[in-house]
Image (cartoon, rainbow, N blue to C red; front, side, top):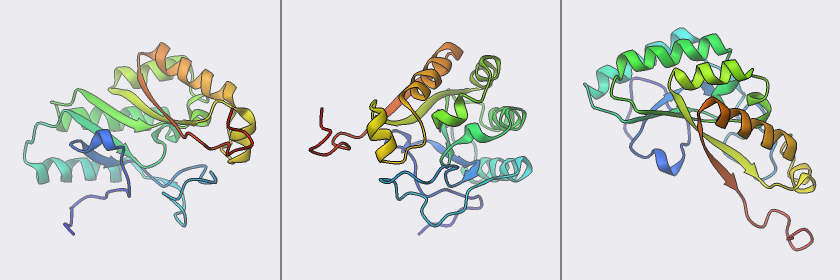
Length: 184
């Protein structure tokens, strides 16, 4: 296994195979969904901005000017960061990787709706322009059953906020979560 001079998280979306990976958090702030095993046993924390910046500098040196088009911010939810901190990271990232056209992140509905529309727009304008969101199901009954910690209303509100800010969304839906009893 190759060793990197910067920290990497355990997963990334399939679409991000050629992307620069920069870790902003450890784990998931919720980490209670019945179906998810990605961050089990991992305590959630937000990485300090200076630590993230050191990793960006280390990645820039390591990749030696590679013209990345996309960067994925790891782990489970960069939106939980204070808006000012996230903006600082995004600006620093652009300074060190000027060829980036897209910055992406997982976005948990519950943390996204805590941001104001102005904050969402500012985050998008700073470069975070595509979100991977775990909708899983549009059924409140199923969302409660799988311990998702959100409602269909939260999902609609967060998606609307992201779109109004100019962000693109990639929603994950898990077919069959309701089992035989709730398949409809």
